[in-house]
Image (cartoon, rainbow, N blue to C red; front, side, top):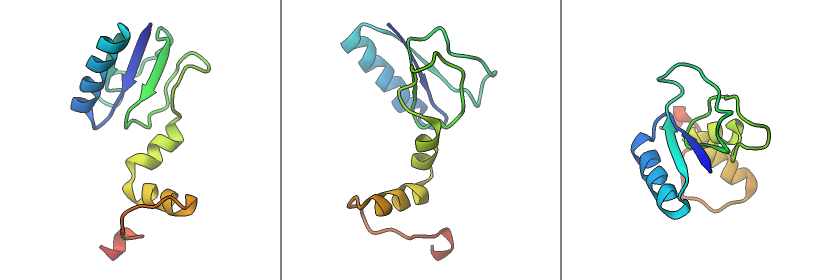
Length: 101
């Protein structure tokens, strides 16, 4: 099994995740920073996991573990808390707008 982890800001924890997956699954796991490197496709991977990266990528159909839209929401803390509130998910008190900070 070959897995690509795509990240934009969480490089250290992405590498930790890759080590854990290699150990537990015996998989080939590579970490890529698509915003810092050339554009490429990831079709040679069995699975693609966007870990804090909302970049659109080329990959095998049905092989991306999470979509760019939700990942983009999670990277934006205000959007994340708004999504939690809209879904009725309990979360810590936070400001609703950047202008309120």
